[in-house]
Length: 299
Ligand SMILES: [Zn+2]
Image (cartoon, rainbow, N blue to C red; front, side, top):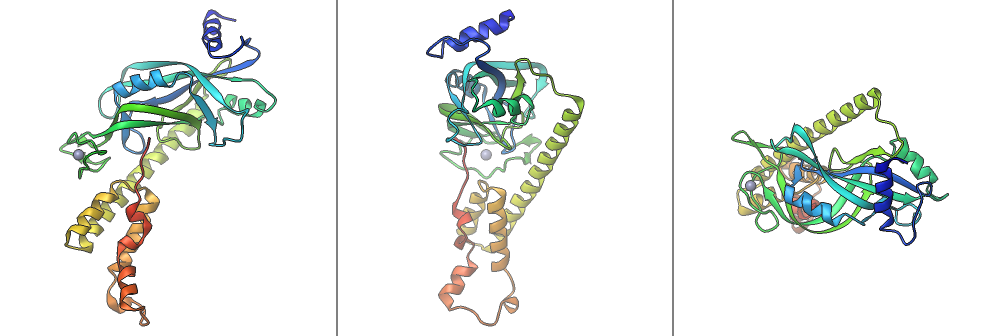
């Protein structure tokens, strides 16, 4: 056992009731999150990363959000902030990520899971935490207190709009999931494992490209729905509705778009047999679809 592994084992054993040997545990590294702008247009501030670094030590991870797999839990026993010299985020800041060392006690029950992590199948990690501030990069508004009209992903006078998550007040869990919001999050290395091969890198690049295309389609859709909201009515209601669009996911945007388009159809295209006036009013309002009231939020 090399010195580094020995040190890790020592740190791990500080978390267990009895001392474990290297044979008894499975050690792996993961990237929990970073300060790069993610698929949702959010990033963590440096202060948030530092707070997460402190709070994630000792936190248990779950797999596929399946709480029944009691043998399949891993625990973080060490965290560190890493920088990559010369690398900048999309916002032009020095890149920083929060890396962690985790362990699982090897059992018959988790042998398959360990094989999957080794093979890179279980790779993506997502974290959940509570942030006290979500700050707009354009106007500095904290969206938790005061919404603004800037749209994430859009450029304002050459500056990209995104939200910075700050003031971490709690961390809940970390888990392996199919698609994490944070692109780079995931298992980076397992002890004794091998580095990624070229083919994996090509597939990873293709996957990133596909995600980026998805981002563009979803932003186009968001802008289009906002345009429809304003066309839908001249009153203050359309403005409020347009504001709520900022927090909708793609499925909700599609539902609302459908609803708006239907309500703006010329009368002659509507079926001749119409419901009574109250029902017709309800059907014509985009608020009748649940999507308008729902908003997504992280943490
Ligand atoms: Zn703003």
